[in-house]
Amino acid sequence: MSFINYKKREIILKIVYYGPGLSGKTTNIKFIYSKTNPDARGKLVNLETQQERTLFFDFLPLSLAGLPGFETRLHLYSVPGQLFYSASRKLIMKNADGVVFVADSQRARKDANITSMEDLEENLEHYGVSKDEIPFVIQYNKRDLDSKMPVEELREDLNPGGKYPDFKAQAIHPEGPGVFDTLKALVKQIIKELKASQK
Image (cartoon, rainbow, N blue to C red):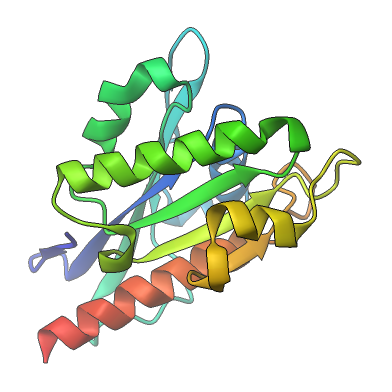
């Protein structure tokens, strides 16, 4: 649930990047951090686990239209993808305003994507919500690899009927195609819901 700081005139949105291990969640956040104005961002916090990292940083997007008279600050988190970090993922999901599911496009990661999506659904259920009740987008990352599955097949596994907005991405690419498109689409959903709730 978004937090409104009336003293600073800020709306704080918590966005969680979710997905299987090494799907590109960390790479997405690092890319966004690298392209964000240093004066408008906080420190990149890196929590190391044996298998993977959890990253966090916050920033004020300069071109984001939120509620009149308020700036919108985004808190971005990545969750550890390895299944044995379930408790960490559940904790990070608490009070999330929106979720980006980062799928690994490689065919060898098909089962890992599906398992991670099921894990996300369980963790949302723990907090009494579903993917239909929270702003949610899917990113098919690693589209630059030869071993990638067709988007149609990924969509069949993770987004049947194209119910949720989804994007192709290459988070490791110097220009990060699809990375900001994914984030912007999610933030628009969150802001739309926030404005509707203020009426």
